[in-house]
Amino acid sequence: MRKYQEGRERKLTELVCNCCGKKLTVENGIAVEESCHIEIPWGYFSKKDGENHIFDLCEECYDKIIRGFAVPPMVEERTEIF
Image (cartoon, rainbow, N blue to C red; front, side, top):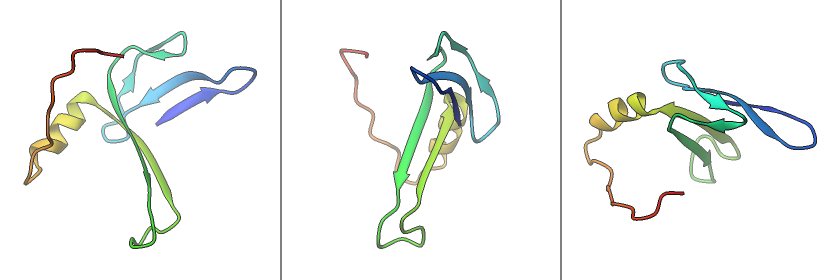
């Protein structure tokens, strides 16, 4: 879950893992701990048609969740980090 300071420029003020509730470090509007940000716009063929679900996971919760996958996510090495 992300909270922003509204105003002239939208600035990130808080970042909390939706799974465990851990507050992730934010400095000067920038998250300095890595997290997984997910936005899912549900469509016509779901029971959530028209809903947009948004959440954040800390790295530990992400790792715990993917360990339970029947098919693990594809992992590719990146040469540039942005």
